[in-house]
Amino acid sequence: MGLMDSLLGSREPRRGGGGEYVELDAEDVEGSVGETATTVHIASIDSQRDVIDIKNAIYDGDVVVADITRATTTDETMERIVGDLQEITSEVGGDIVQKADDQLIITPGSVAISRTKLGH
Image 1 (cartoon, rainbow, N blue to C red):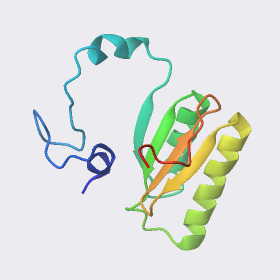
Image 2 (image 1 turned 180 degrees about the horizontal axis):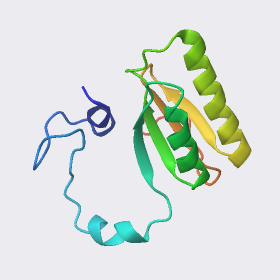
Image 3 (image 1 turned 180 degrees about the vertical axis):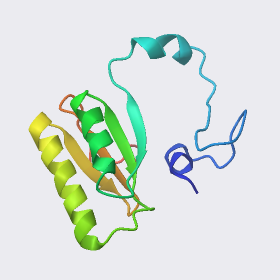
Image 4 (image 1 turned 90 degrees about the vertical axis):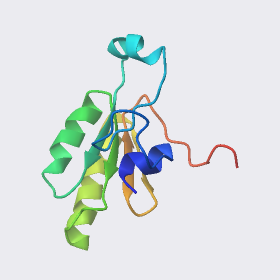
């Protein structure tokens, strides 16, 4: 199950196919995309250098959902990566959580992450 599959709860693309993104039918979304102030980025953390792009996105006020399942780094390196991301979120007043063993969610100062699941 891919990152977007686990986020969206879908295993098959609705249309088009190919790639990791599942296109959902939403009539009003396409017209408003250019007007949004915050973008949600999907990232994959494989090494320390991936932190740079995530850092830039957070400083720009965007949200990042990072897949860490492919991280082939040592525990020490992963701790350093998470430490760097925690420092970045602290600098901007943002938030960071680890979802299960495979994802980090990192936000800028304008976005908080609830620790309570909806519907439970």
